[in-house]
Length: 132
Image (cartoon, rainbow, N blue to C red; front, side, top):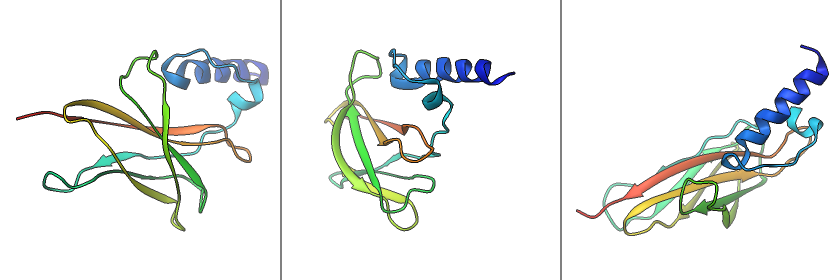
């Protein structure tokens, strides 16, 4: 493929992936930029009443801000809302406590803004609670 075709394909893929299918305007240069490799997982230590936290890592991102966002449903109509910010440590890892409903599903993501040659990047974690 030539560069123009590659840039157009990258832009279409970035548009479909970003925001769960929401239309996102982006330039071909931004769409062609690589995303950071990120991980995110929700962890609840054994026993009820203990705090739930989200943790993960971000490739080549030491001591920088990670934005933690949440939303109440998986559909595109539910917007991501910023919950808090945390920073990565010297090993590029992050960890922060989050909240959860008494019952139902919840959706969290860790997000890093574009920086250097990287574009906007995120990793999503999903959890649920239920009543016994």
